[in-house]
Image (tube, rainbow, N blue to C red; front, side):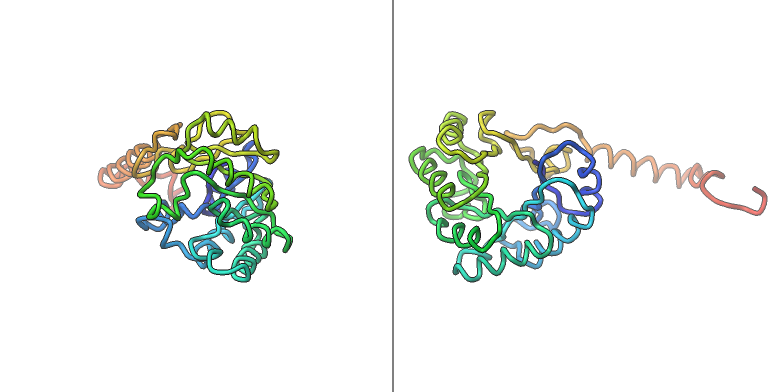
Length: 243
């Protein structure tokens, strides 16, 4: 899986061998310039979900439920998950384990598939004391079991020791997807900006396959040079009565 936030990128990724696309609330930092995911709202998620869905990707589209869209009550959780499903999400993802058991169960029973998310849960970075590696093996195992029992069809495991991710994967029957948790899960997910080298920071667990930030800067520099020197537009770039 990779994150995707807009129509043009979704069109590109639709023609790849990816299995899933995640409309992640990480769009807050990567697309909107927010300091964290806490500022992302349902309106933001709906807007970006619509853009991705318009590309008609064949992959599974999972959409993050943003901060405070599911914490307050079962009713609001079902309503917000239902809204994302109506906009084209094949499934929703929410953060937490044991503490969101009832929320996950209610959403699933309403007919909407849920992907869980344990380990480092960015929406709770304030109570976690920052974006830290989660080390409590017993709690992580309990969280995974709770999500499976509640009906989650898959679980993202973020920023935990690889040995713990292996145990969780062996313990539950649903697929696990790692991000910063080693190679022992059933799948992997990354933020597209990290893969393409477009982010402001480079997470230790990400692999930069392309330095697109530098490529874009170089292309723009060349464009400016060509305009100033008169090389652009050339005759091939415009129509004239003489041609």
